Every structure is written in C-alpha cells, then in structure tokens.
Image (cartoon, rainbow, N blue to C red; front, side, top):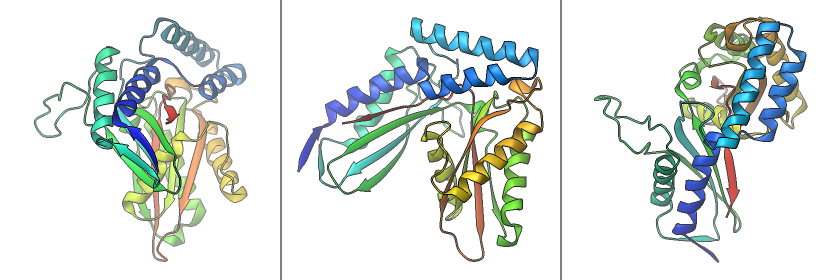
Length: 278
C-alpha cells in the first residue's frame, strides 16, 4: 500500500490554487487564438485579442487573469490502495486557504443566509471518487459567479428526445447573453438523477477543450449544439459575431426509463483549471 502524507497534498493544492488563477492551460489559449482568427466581427476580434493580451500579462506577472477568482471546486480520484497519512479533506481545504491567501486571490465564499464572508475562500467544494490502484489525482476548477449563475438543470420527459436536449442547452446559453463572459465552454450532463446530471456537467469541463466525447453519436451532438449556439450570433461578450462558445462537452450516465435529466454548467472564457498526480 502506498502512503501519501497530507503535507504533500496541502502543498500541491496551494500551488494549484495560485497557478490556476493566473495561468490558462494551452488548450484554452489555443482555442482563443483560433476564435480570434475566425471571428467575423471586427469588434469581437479586437476583444479576443485583448483577452489574449490579458492572459499573457496575468501569466508573466503572476496576477489573476480575472478578478473573480471563484469558488474552488476540487475533484479527487483516490486509489483504494493509497493510504493518506493525515486528513485528506482537511488537507485540501488548507491548501485552498493558503493558496488564496498567499496568491492575494479574492476571497468570495460566504454564508448563504447572512452573506458573511468566511475570509478564507473555504470551504472548497470537493468531490472524491474511489478507484482501484495506487493513484491520487487532484484537479482544481475555480468557478466564477458570472458563468456559474447562468447554469441550469431540467428534468425532461424522455419524449423530448435529442431535439429537446438541444433546444434546452442552446436556449440557456443564448439567453445568458454576455453575463457568463463569452466565449464560453458549455458542460452538459445527461442522464442519472437530479444531482448526478449536475455533477457530470461540471466534471465535463475538465476534459481538454477540443477533445470530443469518445462516443461518435455524443460527439456529433456536441458539434450540433456548438454550431447552433454560435449561429445564434450572441458573440464575444454579447457583441455579436460567431464565437459565443469555444466548445461543448457532454457526459452521459444511464437514466430511469421515465426521466431525462439535463444539466448545463457554463464556464467563462477564463477557463481556469489545474491537475496533478501525487
């Protein structure tokens, strides 16, 4: 059995929390570059260029790419043959606290009733999946409020079919307009139950941008939804053009015969995430 000390987890999460705030991953930068080059609107193209300049400054100066440094959503894949020496959940929370403090990142987490800020950007939202083996994989996905607030979930009847799914996703994204800071990445969860669909939608955002679902029919659905969203013409920051969305990611789970849950989790153009194997 492999042992991992909680101190290693604290340090890894601390570093990822800071780096996620100021370093966009190569797949995101490449998607923004391609969007700029194919943009039909001169104004939107200029905005995309500014977004790329902003990302470059943030990376070089080690300052947040966006002032909303979000709620830290952490996905953990824990091998059943790994023994954590210490408290896994406490270590992740401490890593988030340290990262947001030392990185001078805005602390946005508050009590939902009193609205009193916790002052630490914790508690983070943590999802743990137990798998075979000796692997510990941690991903951090800071979720800003502008995009998170535009997300949604519906319980469609199975008779709605794929057209119903497409209509729901496209309408949600188009009606969101400039609020989620497009061009957006659209995460979609289909199937399971109420809460499973929402988790699938968020987890789909961790898939590298531009990588289609391995199932051909699902990949085709992703492409159809993406084209419909962009054809609607909302565009970059609602200024028009053909780049409302950079990508659509769909994840599936078997559902009850009487139900078709569909969740949509929208991510802004500053799609920040980091991952590590320990």
